[in-house]
Structure formats: structure tokens, C-alpha cells
Image (cartoon, rainbow, N blue to C red; front, side):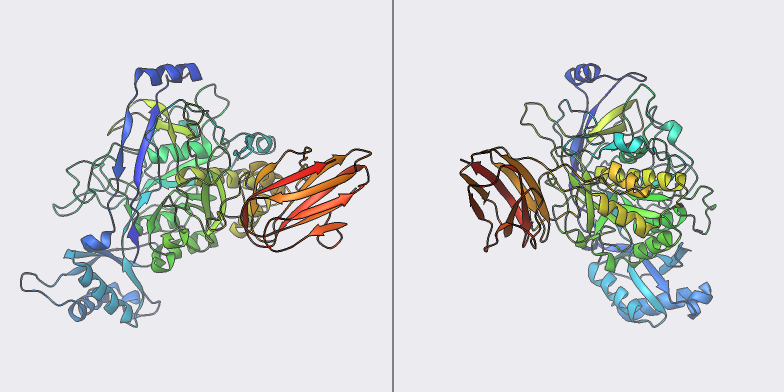
Length: 614
């Protein structure tokens, strides 16, 4: 069963004057006491509260697929077989309100079904030979995890050549994403002064707008689907009992859009990852999230597919960013998987956030779907973020932020475009947030840089599979390796390297780090078969060279040679006993440059390397 996410979310906002920005103005504004969005708890699993919404896909060629007038009879038969009416209840009536972009019927029940009733109904529908799949039409939520400890940040470490940054400047020398469209499926967007010129028309796909007394007003804008993808605010209050709790508007989609393509070189605000690209806001999240069926339709539409009742997208997206998700494996969410498959078949790359539960992403959708690029999060120092989901579903990681207060002021937020309005939109400001929601748009922006570079070099557009491979191939090793049981993909996203591979150029050989006599180099880690090379200078007259791996966990081997970097096959000296405490001692070593290679025989973490010459 696909369940909504439940995680705490909050935000910190620093207001800045329109048209100007400086650290000093931000600090002054902070000192004046800006509003901080309160901590909020999103609702628990929908299944525990009953259900009214379902998605049913009939097999091609079946009677209900050929003739929609047969659908009511099919639904009624499943209802009568699966639901036993209690004395105080009536048999629910199921109605198909529309056919979705993938051909599935979007179903609403006339009353709330208890968990046992909804499961019995799904069991009967799935047993029908005419039915390809049946599932709950659950809500998904913005994957924002935003600490409520507002302090002065270091702006845009995430884009620069910092330890944990994506190395944007070296990529921008060759590409800014020009000519590429990135669809951001989120809460919509506001026309922020530092974003508006890079926004193109999108669409509002939220179908629930409280048109009846017993229907939640998810949209909050007084209407259903329409061409206006402006974010009206996603606040929650006591008038929305289906959400629970209360919170201010997040302006989540505006923040994500700014990370992708905020206006740059305009003298104000922040830069975007691919500031030459265009962002197409597609609104799918409102008060307390959004429905899977709406998100599936929006994925298809954004990629250029047809959705009944909606004008076709005149500017189909090259990249789709999904900083959203719900609990439950994608195998239990075939509507989302089918929409993703249709999008990638059209050549659109789909980037998704891994989630913020510090859990295995395989248990969340769309993070565990096929044909997506799932992104984990790292902090300012390149360490896995404390909240980031992990596991085999994650392709690579990018900056999501994880504030560090060790210096006395908070550092490490991801800063982007936002709004100060508690409910409806107010003044344009910059907002610091953290979460895998912030990591994913960095990668979506890098994909835009790659596509623009490839096309500009007359190499043609890259397929989604090629994009994924080049991202993985160009990812650089984590500055601090994640724990062996919390892997977040191939490494840290590297915009400069990804653009070079998109241009058809080989990656330059990374410089070999040096070891100082008697100085421990610590924090080394990686997966099985991963290796690291170091070099040191051995002066003439040295009587003993002692090389060691120290501390940590896992299993490594140590290799050494003079004059050339060793491999396990040609090393002059080696130590490969079980565990990670390896030692090589060389008497009267030859003077010159020596090289060490540490190879993971199994996953390893926090291993130190030490060289001592006497």
C-alpha cells in the first residue's frame, strides 16, 4: 500500500530588500527578528484513516477499456463482492471522475471506506481479469526538511568549488543550460524577482478544490485544473482536519525552482544551477500534499504526452524534478511508474528526491521507481545528511544541507528564492532550507547543463539512460564516505565533470593527495573494490619507511611502490590480511616519490592512513 510521508518540516527565512542583497543586509534583517515557520508534523498513513480515492487501470482490449460505459458495472460488481455492509452503513458507490493520462480510471467512493473495506475492494478489483492494476490514490508531499534554527548562513556553498559543492563555475564556462526546459512538479511558483524571467507557462494539475462539503480543498485557489501554476500558499490550519496540525505556507516550489535556475549575473539574490535554462512550474501539491493521480497526469503532460481535458504542453520538458514522495514501494504504485515510463520513453529525464526519513529509499515512491535518478543529500562538508534516505535505489548525492553550528553560527543551509507570506504570498525573500528536496534540483540543473552542452557540441540530446550513466561516471568520491549500511550512490554530483562527459571529453585525472611524515590522514571510506591513491616523498638516507592503515571499520588492503602508482597485480609491496589494520615496512627505501593504494576488500569507513619515515 502506498502511504503518505510523515516527517517534520520547518523553515528559516531571511528577508532581503528587492534589487539588492548582501550578507550585511541579511544579518541586519536577521537581527531584527524575521518570522520563522513553525515546526509542523504532516499526517500519518492515509490507510489508517480510511480512503475514498482509487486508481484502476483496465487491460487494453477489455470491455471497460474499450467502452467506459462498462466501468460502473465493473466497479459495482467488485464493491458488492468485496464489502460487507455493517448495520449503520450503506454500500458505497464508486464513480469514475475521469480517465488519467496513462489510461487509468480515477475513482471516488461515495463515502470513506474503512481500511479493511478498501483492502477488500482492492483485492476484488485485482482479481478481475479485466483489471491491469488497482491502487489507492494516495497523497504525496513535498520532501522538505527545514531546521527551525535560523542563523547567518554561508550562501551558496552548494554551487561552488567547496568540499561539498557541485563545482558549478567550471561547468558554467561551457554551459548554462540554455535551450533546456526543466519542469518542477511541486507547489507551483511565485514570480520572485530573482526567478521570474526564467519561468515559462506551466499548469495547475490539482483536481481537488472542495467542490462539495465532504471533499478536502487541496487546491486552495478556488478552482480545479487550469493554466495558472502560481503558488497560492500551502498553509494548514484547523479548517483542514484531513491534514492535522497547522503550519505556514512553505513556498517549496519557488525554492526548488530557484535552485534549478534562479536568474544570475543580475546583481541581486542568488544564482541557479542552470541559470540559462527555463523552469516550467507544474502545480501538484497544495494543502497537505497532492494526489498520486494528479502527479501521474502532470508527469505525462510535462513530458509532452496528452492528458484529456488539458491542452497539450507547447514546451515539453527535457527534465522533470520531483522533490516529493510518499511511503510505499513503487511496485505498489504502478500509476506513478507507468507515468514515469511514458515520460522517459519520450526522452525526458526524471530526477527525484530520495526522502528525509533516514531510511532505505526502496520503501518510498517515486524514489524506488525504475527509470528515475534518485538523489540523496549531503551537507556542507560532503558527509551524508543526517536525514537522507539511502540504499540501492539512490543513484548519487547532491547538496541538500545539514547545518553545522560548531562555529557558533549556523552554516550549511541551501539558500534559494522564497516568500515571507505566512499564508498568501507577500514580499520576495531568500530562504534557507535543507532536505533531499534541495538535493534533487541541483541534479536536475546539472542535467540541463549536460543537455545544453551536448546539443551545443552537435552531439545531440542525451537519452535518460545516458544522462544517468554520465552523472554516475562523473560523480566524485564523497569527501567523507557514508557508512557502509547507508550508501547514497556513486558519489557527489559534479557539474563540471558531467558537462565534460556530455561534451565528449574525458575526465582529467584527479591530483594525487600527498601524505606528510607522521601526520594521520583520516576519514577514508568507500565500497568494496573502491580504491584511493596517496603519494609521499622519501628523502635520501631514510632507513625505514612504515606505511599503515589505522582505525575505522571494514576490510582494506594496502599496496605500495616507488616511482609509480601500484595496482594489486604489480605492487612492489603489499599487506592484505583480513580487517583494516594493514602494515608495510620497507628497510632502506629508495629515495624519491612513493605511492600507496588502499583498496576496499569490503565496504569500509573512517580508515586512517599514516606514513612514517626514519
